[in-house]
Figure (cartoon, one colour):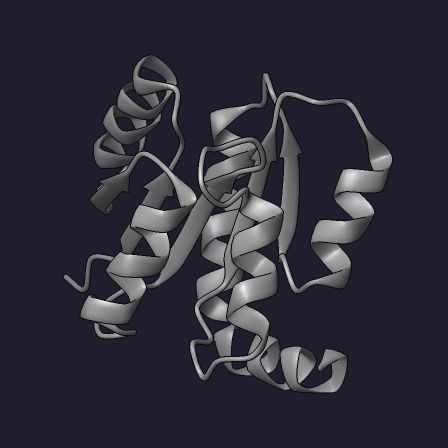
Length: 136
């Protein structure tokens, strides 16, 4: 079985732990970080090997999820990013999509919907790369 690896970046320790536990229950391998700087460091050191999807919170210390998307735009890293946010601000969602997020979820969200988004992102990854190139 080819298990997908999901990176979960959220500074809320309890939410991150719960999300990781639920995703592990679906069979995903999990890598967790607590802020945007740690996420960017992980990507710089780990590269794209075996990382299938990133789930990043909007409001994190150091780099927000939006900041991470902006930082990734100028790189060769092409891992799909799903953004999660507690803010009910449609401008944040538009900015995230404009910067390349494949999906945006407002907390609280249905874990089944998140799982479906992860599956769509990993199945469409080659097309997502093309989409990302067009947006640059």
